[in-house]
Length: 255
Image (cartoon, rainbow, N blue to C red; front, side):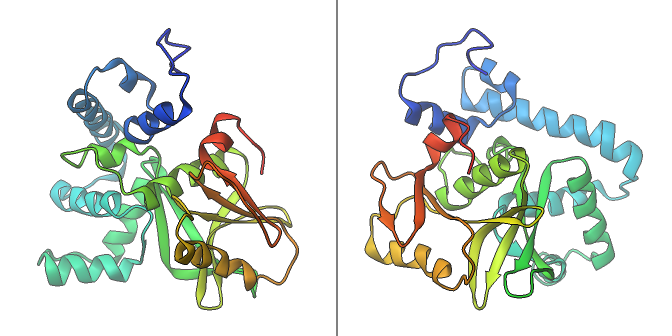
């Protein structure tokens, strides 16, 4: 996108990747020189979506409560929670009366206007989707940074979010995998062709490496398994394909 706009592109892919993590993929955001200006721009985009697509068509009666629900989901992207989780939080913690049906409706609205994407949970044993708790990812990471006052990154959910969007854009159906009591970050599929994917910032620590590999050992089929990290040094282990996230995204690599 920078090249298309006639902007300088760093030869260091790590620099470009870190900028993308914070700035997101809204093309016009690149034209703003500082973080505060980009944050204001992203807020204006969300405001326009509310006024044009949500307020007019969805008939939101209480904008303040809607924005609280929206803010909760944005600030907890990549986390697993349910409608019951939000119901308990708003009614018991924030003391904001809200019905479960309203929460479901608000989540549906945010999904329909593509501010968030719902990533369902999938049971590897039964090959069926699971109801209840879900994960939600952002259509663009800059949506999160518009709500915070600094640019510190929680790499875990941020990297998951980027990989999730990449997989969706690659034509896969994406789910969070349940394997017994363990979780696989993503199970992706086209028809009956599956891929199992774990995402981590690094496996430099042996404890982290073992944790990331553990779900793979519970999988009994022979579909490909991938571990995606930011590590520059990749390893071969137990048939799992270890790949660098930056390389995969930069080269538009097919998994």
